[in-house]
Image (cartoon, rainbow, N blue to C red; front, top):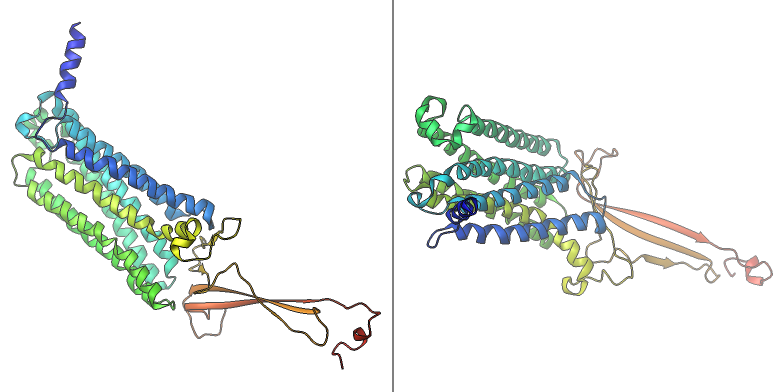
Length: 395
């Protein structure tokens, strides 16, 4: 009987208390987990079933980032369960160790998820522009993202040596020399927050010049720029999170305001994932809701597969602007005989971003749209016993 009573007492000690911010962490985490799962699922469905080329590296990285970010949201809820969002004076002593463990897990999961999502976006950019200068800028951003993430990951593990001192405040008090001082930790967190915001801004601003150079209708350019501009919401979320990093440095009631900081950590990445997957929504709408999208696609019995080049060649296949790719332009030429000669004319447009424009080489098409035409000529012979067959031109 005694073990049952003790278990009930411990369960009650971990319960969400009235008048705290604990419930807000569940209210943020659960809806975002559902929305992010749906968005990533739609992206994978589009890549597998609706797009030629299948799942690419950027899709795999985005999926992995979503998995780690869902883990971050779960870790946030565990923190809330053990007292994050409550006043420090109200947190039970037995809850402090699991709370600190979950808090360290949130920091590590945040780094991994954010790194994977940023890499997914940068890999996608490699297909937008194949110019050498742009590629080097993207590679530089990849290097800074990986370097900052790896360095921060190991620093968090080595703030206390051994790492177990992080969740043992009594041992920290006895051996303060084995952990970084509070001021040193805060300096590190401030530097990381600033670098992270600079990286985010650079990543979301980088594709704007690329898109504007494309020779596509102005309305499409504005739509693409507006779509990628939604990523700046993630930058704003990162700025709010950094505000709480600065605010918590001088706040005595740490765990009460920690709930807001942890919420914005997960919101920053959830928004980045949703914005990163938004480009696939158009394909899904055009396939399943052609009337709503204003397209004639979907009228055929089979589900159309849109062209999407995964070969990192810098080319994206597009339909001719304002036309239906499923329709073929066909012209018939008759030379005195009916239905003898038929010319089929199919057109296909490609965005090409190769380096040399006017060289006359195989890379002469770049920074614009290349129109290629395939012409098929079918010739049939008229029966020999008709008079017109001896005089094909009918003269």
